[in-house]
Amino acid sequence: MSESETILHVGGAAPYDVVVGHDLVGRLPAILGPDVQRVALLYAGQLGSLAERVVDALIDDYEVLALGLPEGEAAKTAAVADDCWEALGEKSFTRSDVVITFGGGATTDLGGFVAACWLRGVRVVHVPTTLLAMVDAAVGGKTGINTGAGKNLVGAFHEPAAVLCDLATLRTLPRAELVAGLGEVVKCGFIADPVILDLVESVDPATLDADSPVLRELVERAIRVKIDVVVDDLRETGGRDGHPGREALNYGHTLAHAIERASGYEIRHGEAVAIGCVYVAELAHRAGRIPAELVERHRTAFGRVGLPTTYDAAPFEELHATMRVDKKARGSQLRFVVLDGVGQPSILSGPSEADLRAAYAAIGGAA
Image (cartoon, rainbow, N blue to C red; front, top):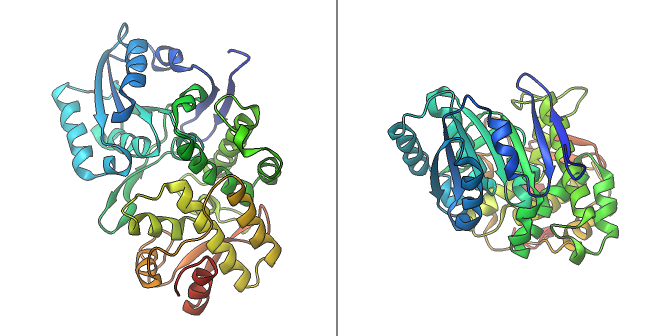
């Protein structure tokens, strides 16, 4: 192992490693092993030149099927998944072969779902190329596609065989995408690791780039938060001692997914999460869970790194209707992950419509 690499181990029934470092693509043959004959590389279409480097690292040892995917959330459809399965079938892809994803969170979600369903499950290795995918989609085994009713409503749990978080790929990431990824990082600070908040509040945000040691520490800390949660509650069945388990990772996501759908997925996921976290902080304050000072800390922490904390582009009724089919909902009752304090996530069930509207008004919406 190079001194420049960090290996974070994910335990459980199907253990694997998350490697964080620079220029990691050369590790792939050793991870895949000699028994693999075919590799399907599912990559974000706009990353063609970078994907060629992955092909070059594999072509001497494996038969490589490279499948370019549509950009962003447009990849996460049943039609795109079906195209991938047909391609795997044409190449006689077997259970001993492997899928590799190379791209952002949408690529990881779609590619993981394709691997989970093909022959009822083949190995998948994720090589996330965005900050958001590194700290969120690539770790934990959640896969999924979108439907007309909402985001990630169809999917499967399918843990990867390995994850390579190659920080060098962030050098070509547009600044707005890197900032959006910080939404999930800051979220991890609020639900589990206050040191993340301390770092974000003390560093000059302009210095956070692919080679920043502070960004690397933020990435590793956020991944550790996710590992700790998913190992204890892989399938989101509940945590222990009052902890909401894996649901805690959905802090801010109930409104965030509704905002994404209302915008036609033009709002980046991390941006929507930042807004959603401020919203549930307002909701928790109205429920007597947290003081106003902690609500304000949400605004300053997300806002400091350049993320939005207000939203008024959709009527409450539209967002409310989407939130009612959120995965955390039970019957007709809405459930939100909230905080009882920093690092103390819990569940708020059945808040009043008056509080839901008031919290939306507090972030700038028309209630």
